[in-house]
Image (cartoon, rainbow, N blue to C red):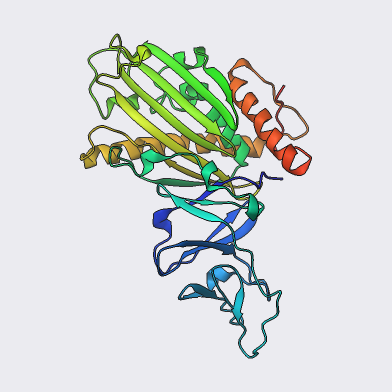
Length: 349
């Protein structure tokens, strides 16, 4: 069971070049994505209404897509406009069309009730497209339930043990506790780590003379969007007071979208506001982030395979943010369907 009345990221804009058909499973439904000749993104059910062949194996004809099994042609609204060999088109000849919005490099899809889709609810990911921030787009496919990935992003104490040579750098991370506040559609998490050695990730792109103060401030929003301001700057230069002098600052945007109960899509970027014209730093940041996220993927996929659904997980203090978020998320699911998803055995008490 999934939360359907929500906006999900389904692609980066560059994944939809002119003339290409992209198939992507979303909430256990096959979805076809493409662009019309004027550049507008379209999302249709990737299943012809005739014999259920994938439309993604078809061909584009202007604004329309033709199924290459028996030739039915569908317009961007999902309506069948041609059936080879007959002049009459059945009124039921159609496939589902999804509300879709392209904003700041991400393509968002609404898999729920179309009349409830409000583009104003799409979170602001300004740093993905702002000329003041530089980033490289990333994507990973997980063989794991999406809620395990959400849990991982909600508890950064794992950085100390999963990422000791990349994003972590010190086990002191596990000894700090974040400030967690509830939002209408999620939680706000703030974590500080003061007077520590720079993380390996930071040292590769900047030379610090001594210790630094590090911070992670992020909103984590239903259905699984992380918007984070993080960074590091020399200790004693005012970071805790809001003065970011000589800081390395990042505006990370991450989105988790369920493919099905067993697999997930993970879209990410870590925009920075320094050395905007340095291609070497582009490569360094992306290499380190990709390495770190592969570390997450390894442990989360192993966790997914190892879960005993008949045995509850033991909660600890570090679970505060994920526990709060799960309660909020479950309230949305319950409001929509009258029941709470239970595909991952975990206690939220």
